[in-house]
Image (cartoon, rainbow, N blue to C red; front, side, top):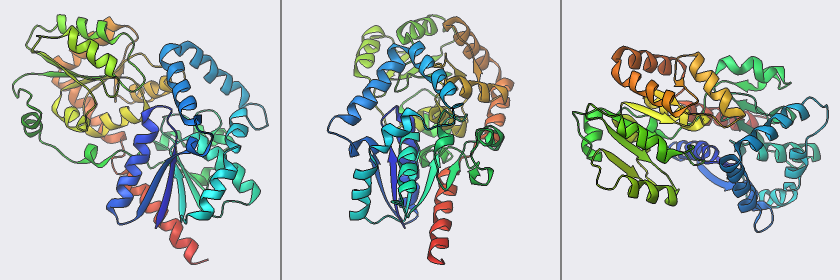
Length: 375
């Protein structure tokens, strides 16, 4: 089976979900190609779309929230959105690519390629089956105007919401959000701490700054560190944000209780090694934490789908959340001190997470290909 995975650089969550599917496909002997949908546009389309999105979210979150709310209003109008027509412009170059390259099935963890697929289907240009994968715990605006063969959604409790917007119920499969295999495997905390050179006898906070920011993380980290009275350590993962990494390294230079980490391939190991995590409520990062089983404090969400993610997790006891730095830190300390609270949260995560989502999505694609062969 040869699969094309199309994503888009509007935050790392979509790409991480795509990579998880690709990794699973290759582990099962299939061939997978993953591309940025915007690469089919003009030379700088990907940078403009991805960069514009990230800057809006990080620098003007209220503006992003207004745009999201506008999308909620537009979806009530019974006509295609501007998002559909913008992505329809990529249909012809994608069609040319698919005519050169053979793929058995197409999958996307992002709305934009699904919009392109829909336009191509209407034109009769897309013989392959298509699978869309939702990476937030809500039906974001405009999923309902797409026409994919199946929609993989994060949880069975979301079926009613997606169906209420008009997506056929029979197309909704609550298989979960796919995460990479490193988050699924069982790891010994002591063994991981040895590998990462972290102390075995101390409690450790993990702070994930995320690909799209964490508010004023330097203030958050300072207040968290100043309040540590029982030898707790802090690990801060900055990802690709070099400026944030350098600022925090300077801020905590000489403080042995704070480790600042830049880009790392060992996020799963850090999650397994630490006791409590502070993280933005992105759908993918929250799922990775839940699959790993680390008690979670969600920091202030970006207006829109992240608010829905927080609501979903908190309602099921999978995380706690607070708007202010003071309350976030207080909740983190409460979790760190209460073994029972941490264990109850881990149990809630275990009951609601879908660690085998990637494998189940691959199985779905295998079934679709087998059906095609028998037609």
